Length: 306
Image (cartoon, rainbow, N blue to C red):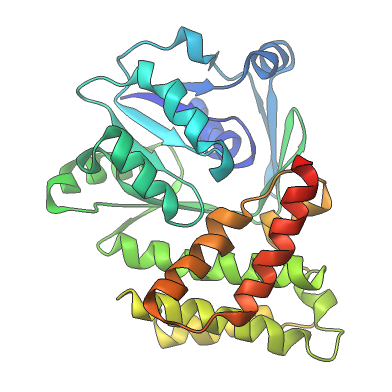
């Protein structure tokens, strides 16, 4: 299976390294300056189990030609429009897409661009950051991908992708209800990102404030009520478990959106919290605290663009 990974950052670098090490036919779509850097210096993935340095096979958009069977998208949501334009040259009649992006809104854009039947459901679970341009730092010992079919006609391909990823040494699950699972992660990421960015701290840091825990729980409640209204309720045990995560006073847990904000980088605020607010409002779900968090995120993004 010829594979194109969009991006060689934290998620793309981590899982792409496993594919590369297993001998998969995998290339990484990157910008010209990043291609020059990675071609010269390579990429090193640093995990609790050790380091894996490798030289990824990189391509730029102008190099792309049809022939890829699977395109794995690991880019940030705000880059999606440009990515769609770039990868069109790589798409042939046998090309499928596995987006490993946060939230849900990207599915609408990919469906419109390439057809609903070609776009699988996917989830990446890891705590990874691009520590510097040539090093991916992975904080957790367990990282995984979940793959699933969004329709009956996708089951065979979804199972092929699941098997291929598993054979490459990646912890991979096959979900029979992948949209439910994507909603689950959507609720977690939107609420955690909103809490971190609104309260300007990790879980343990905002728990030092009088009302930080209650604010985080209310943000999560507004998300789970939105998921329920959409027909994808979170399991009560999952809700209770993440409530404990959001209120652990000893935790340094925080979202990639908060880390990007701290670094002065663009954020996925509109794709995660903004999309959750719009879905809540369309369903008539009260979301006043999410709206406050969104205003904070929009203010930050507006300052970056000014």
